[in-house]
Length: 245
Ligand code: GLP
Image 1 (spheres, rainbow, N blue to C red):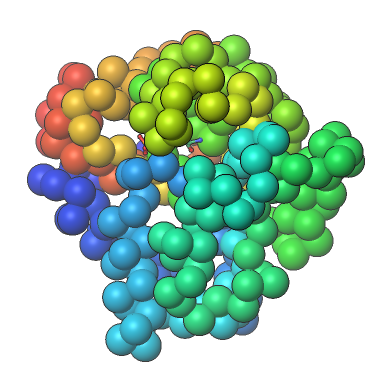
Image 2 (image 1 turned 45 degrees about the horizontal axis):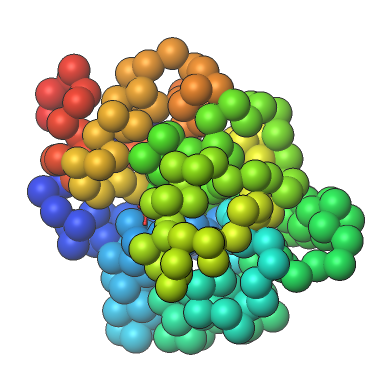
């Protein structure tokens, strides 16, 4: 496990985009796993800048997002599809048909989840998966207690996650109670994983993920089982680590 501690979120964005850009080099097609939340925004901004400068080409990139709320359409301003369009896809030369986000309005959710898994498999799996982390250690929407072998499925959100996400909705009651999320097993299938964290509110989850036991109590601790994981985290998010950087 590699841990890179940076002074602020701009540096986090610059380093994150550089890791992705380097990994993209020399590939005919690049399959990129993406995350939402406020944390990866600086990474996406830097990728947009590099794309405008013609240093990163998205024309042969295929993306798969980690998760989506159930019950809101992609046109809803709090859907993760809408977020991805606004934060990245609308600003780079990616063919829209190459962008995949689970469909929270799918009529048959189990069938849609199985399809989502087979789409990833049919392109040969994800080359690099971007992750954020929830205050309770969740990755994607794999809440504490999620199986390490879990695959893409419909999940229930914890009261803590609903509370954390309420700031984005008019009222807490509007926050969807379930989501579609890649599983921890799905995430662990990516060839390379880069997790970003910014802020003191992530310090406990980061310490548990990196230095704690592999435990369902902290879903991100499962990343210890993967051979190629990099954490790019700000100083305050690294504050609870016993190893000092
Ligand atoms: C949501 C997303 C996660 C994300 C988390 C943290 O729960 N499903 O993928 O990592 O929020 O969000 P933020 O980066 O805004 O703290």
